[in-house]
Length: 614
Image (cartoon, rainbow, N blue to C red; front, side, top):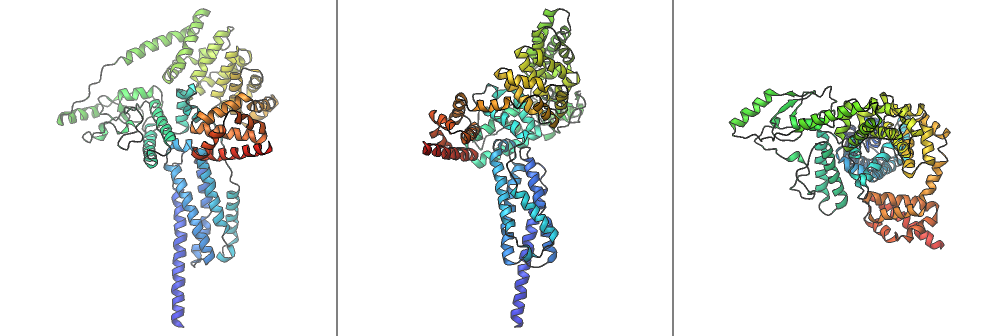
């Protein structure tokens, strides 16, 4: 009898140890995900929300640890299921913390499905917990019930950032959209994905390399190529040229980026420029104390006001020669018989001086009393501001914004048109948005929106949209009565004008007071007209075209729109069938993105219902 009691005590002890280990492992999982600090912007809110929910489990685990007794068998099995759910959550959060930012943006819908799947697993595990068996306090019970309600109420989230990001991604990946190489869209997308500094791009390169290796040469080839190509475009925007050329993304021995070039083991790391990764011949120090090759940092500063390495905003743009480092490099080269690369003498400074002289003259002519001189100057500035990001910064820094704002009140319609378009181009640079607003441009742009030519009105709406990307400008545009003329353009403008007005109104209505203003201005009436327009045959034909020949993301979105339209009107499904969409949907249901497969299958089911009715 004593032996049996002894065996029972050992068994209970073992069960208690096993229970404690299980609880300790789950606490460790939650602490690990709580330490992640780099969640990608596209999933950041959902990640932080999931981490907060997981932390609600900590009081439960700590209370069970304090009891210092084994967990009953049925409850133990629920805890095993809960651990599996926590491991799924950890895997997802780790991917969102260390994975490719471009991939996570491209697959945002699929990632959201993974979040919902984790929520279901957690809820299922918690559903099996028997509070009475565990003997936990009412306070902890209430906390677990709160968590379960949050998990059950979790739904697909579509933030404004997600919508705008998806629109930019669709344009960039579209083969038929002429804006797919638009530098302004690329710049905006790079900033939204936090891929505009050297360090960010270096980390993304490592993540993309890992993704390419995991996928191999046959899996998801098209989307992998898109990710690699977009990464290359971001590097060009940042002033980093990929010298490898071509797309060698599937060759493990090849490099995806310029980060691997010129890293000779012979050359000390501190002698290499952080931008070009080549040995420096003319090292200079910038405001943050970092050292770069003069030519490389000058190219960077043409389009940025931050330190490439630290991301800090620069207090000034002066460059100070780093003589000490220069001498060390020369000494090392002499000692190791290393010949410094000879830099060709280039005339960038001369060309830039000539450009600045011309720009100064043009800005002076903006205030000319001669209409012809004034018109010629503003037209030239409009053209220069469109050409590249460097020009936008130089034009703004040279003092062009105040006279351009004054010209918005010109009696000459052509001058107004050129002026507002110039400001639109300049506003594509984030730092210029505030400068333009500070110079009193918003009421002047609204005046052009009310009284300008058709093209001037369209570009005025686009300018208000661009400026409204800053929250303070949203408030200003609304308070200065900019919404009624936008609604009027939405009602009566050209196709392009309606599009620009709708985009501006959408962004402005993110401010609560502007929503009320938009409703009072009569926005409700034109909105149903726009929805009705979606059901017209040309639109259906265009959507079917995307399903047939679009990028994976385009196919996915077009199928989703067709499904939404077809749920309300079966005639629209029949119209899509007339354009031979059926076989493409079948193919998409097998080989499309995960969301595209779901939407295609749902649409095929809807088609079957329609055919049955016929």
